[in-house]
Length: 294
Image 1: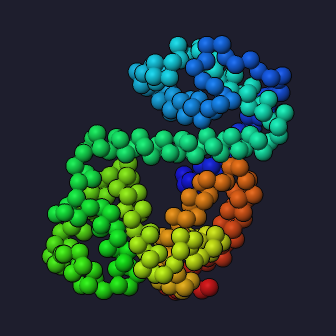
Image 2: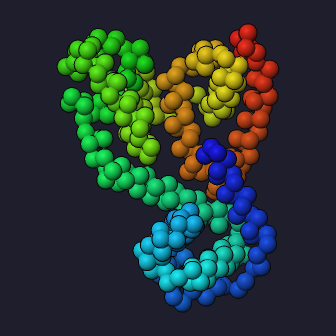
């Protein structure tokens, strides 16, 4: 399930729960609660999500109970009920949008916490994974590739970096192998953070991508149809007037924008669904023996 579908599901689930829950007067905070729903709702949100994800693993669940100051399963369920009452009270007194703002902040905090945990897990599991290869860091490698994809001469880039072709080939292969086995995607994240600014600088662009939200969705659906039809996705991008660097840049920008705003603004979710369906239908007739028509 993709990010867009995941966020859409979260909103739908939240709305279904609100429809079936009565609106109470202002709830009394769970007396034994180590959480403050008003001041730090994201702390409970992250804790409850981690516990629910680990529910079938009794040992891990008990460890998380201890970590978050939760006494037992009954205590956890009482906290869940108090959180639902808090949510209902917020909707009843301040409106649906107020809850969406809180929910968005909770999701953003969860995303940041997951990235931090993934990085810590990677370092603990294999501290050498982030070590430079022959003196070339993952960030160095990302910047070189970005400038090369933007059209700069690789020979010039290698001279500036103090590498010859043989060393670059070894470094490139090694970094790609490391990224391939990095299940936390920490390396690809570091690579992307270095790649995008270098790509923008080389192309003379700003952090805002040259292609709009709609153009990015169209390119995504077109490449998906091309792959299914046996057509080179990069050829499709070319037909759309977009390089691979353009597409990656747009994807990073618009993906982050969607992640940070889709819950507080449900119109973004609706627009994504509408545009995806529009362009999925447009490219649905692609055949194996012909190029996509635009």
